Length: 224
Image 1 (cartoon, rainbow, N blue to C red):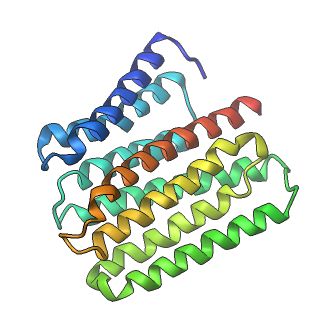
Image 2: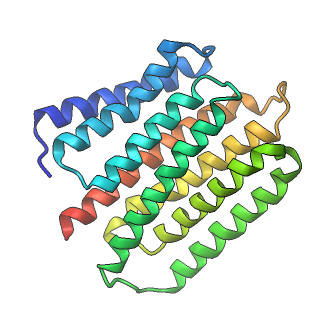
């Protein structure tokens, strides 16, 4: 990968978009400027990765996530399935990346922290699915496949080589973000006081997740 001036400019614009959305647009009503700023976070990061010649699956994951951000920015019922589909593609791309990084590394030790991490991811995901089930309705057709995909992403992240620890932490942060978002979408009443903090938690854990995953994956690619 080549990290020239164009890479750093795009990366800086992505970080600026994430900060602008989290500090200003997060509390604003849906609009095109709001959607474009939200999408700009990973849109610029994707451009930076393309310029740097990052692995294609990583670019796919980031581009799909940027599309998911765009669709979810409008808070419309018809865009929600498109957002979930976009993030489903992103999660499957991450699963592919994590699996191959583990498979070709031969790093399998120590084992017990990996098994413990897998058990916690699976148990938490299953618990959230059971908790949300009564409220899903027809959206279960989209939510359940996505839940399986992000659970698999979390499980495969537990097997990353230890130098890729940022990606493992990023995967956990992604799970936290999506669990809180799921609670917000399907369980919390519209007038719930908890909504004052769920939005910022969802956004900033999501930003941390994407940045940490990119950091960890790039570190492992360089190491190989």
